[in-house]
Amino acid sequence: MYISEDIKYIGVNDYDIDLFEGQYPVPNGMAYNSYVIVDEKIAIMDSVDQNFTDEWFNNIENVLNGREPDYLIVHHMEPDHSANIKNFMDKYPTCKIVASSMGFVMMKNYFGIDFSQRKIVVKEKDCLSLGKHTLHFIQAPNVHWPEVIMSYDDYDKVMFTADAFGKFGTLDIEEDWTCEARRYYIGIVGRFGAHVQAVLKKLAAFDIQMICSLHGPVLKENLGYYINLYDIWSSYEPEDEGVVIAYSSVYGNTKKAVELLKKELELKNQKVVLHDLARCEMFEAVEDAFRYSKLVLATTTYMGDIYPCMKEFIHHLLERNYTKRMVGFIENGSWAPCANKIMKSMMDTCKNLTYTDTSVSILGSLNDKNLEELDALAHELSIEA
Image (cartoon, rainbow, N blue to C red; front, side):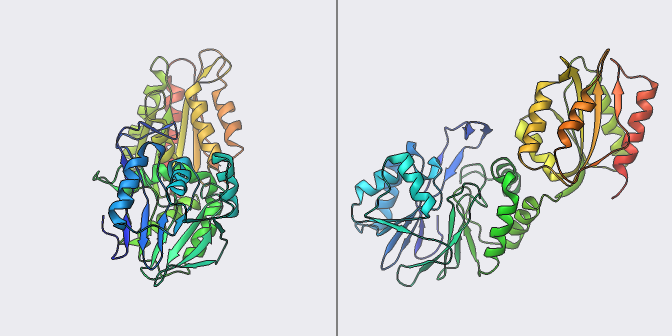
């Protein structure tokens, strides 16, 4: 991959992984990005997952043609990027390692050594000259781990952003960046919106021509588009107008209700996305809940509580600071429905939610009153804010 005359790609593609971080399905695999800046001094930018040690070292050797690196820059200590730090430092005994103070604490935790005789601790606004390239360091705590730093190469105007602006998928897959970057952001970074906002303000001071993340493609064009999306996501504003209906149904009556609601909303020219939480990919549903402006939660009363997949879904929303949306409820319970009360009590821990006046309560199967409630709910959800 060509990045610039002096910056080369030395990362790897993982085609075998099925779950990223043990929970996010990645049908198109994952890229673990690493880069090298070749100047008077040579800087390697991060390492890769433990399963790709030999491939990574081969990539380094092919680029350096006999030269040895002077620095290993560690932007992020998550093991998919840091697993080969000790292997690298053993292989190149004269190389120095550059990271935040917290990064070195984590190295001690992972490897039993913090490279005290070879380490360079950097903080906000520190610089490292490689020759014509100078790296300017930015602290980016909790985007999405506390030790994270970013660095800006002032010669090629490249921002190395750690996990920020990353996406799922290997680099040889042709797919839309936005969908998989959104799912990646909401799932992994979404809780830390305030920290992302703080970093975006710092990035605004730099003339950025390229973004090199630790996952996904190098971003070279229309950077305002990507940065604007990160601003929307991290400020928790809806990206699109529309209604997400997330539901679970045991015998089909709740499913029938949400399908009727979907039909009514579409007749009112509303964008509607339906997720059967027992069958869909859970994090696709979570992604859509943050993407769109309105949400309907529909589930059955189950053992005096709500259906497990609905509880899991709501917990994912709460963990990621769900806010600034309109929310409606539909429950089903043959003799003692309590799902709406439980769902609302869970959602009440969120800030800045607006609830519909209409809630639907089904006693087994739909009746005429429920049809009227669904019509009223559709009307409320169709009113422009």
